[in-house]
Image (cartoon, rainbow, N blue to C red; front, side, top):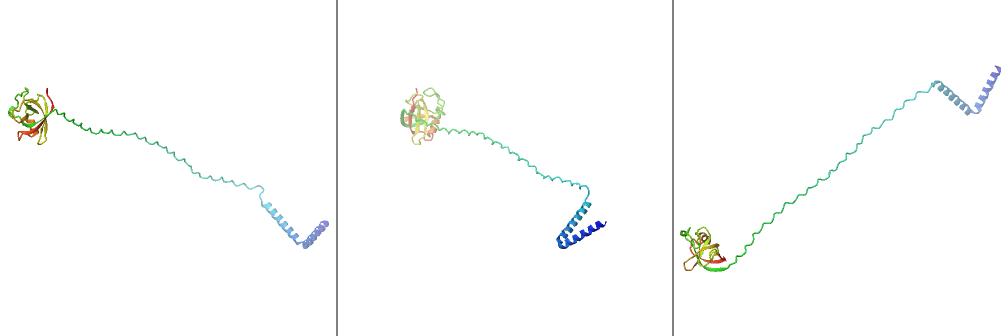
Length: 204
């Protein structure tokens, strides 16, 4: 026991001496002693088993907006235009054929008269009955069936007649025409007019 006491006293003295000489060393020893005390305290307070690990939260999934593909527009082919046939062109109106000038075979000038109503229905020199409503005439020399054009020289009116009788037997007159022909030549009022007789076709 005495040896132990001596040793502790010597150690205490050496520490005091060294602390006086080197105060920094004493401070460091105190800091070390404090740190060792803290470590011992913390070791005594720490539990013997490790704390349970906190469960990790799963990462939040980002909301993804569904992206739908744009509908494909089907291009409809343009409707084919059916060709419309143009309306048929109307043929231009036909011009009436120009009347060929009659070939005049003979021309006579003189006076003309017309038949009276008393001769209507009576036989002519050709044997044909006189009809006041037909275009006929009487001539002294032209054959029966001859076609003549009789023209009123004063007015220019003309008519075609067919010779089927003989006459007139009055001096200065060259032809007698039917009542219908006389109306066209405007003879009814005057009774006698100056005419031009053109032979277009001789009868047989």
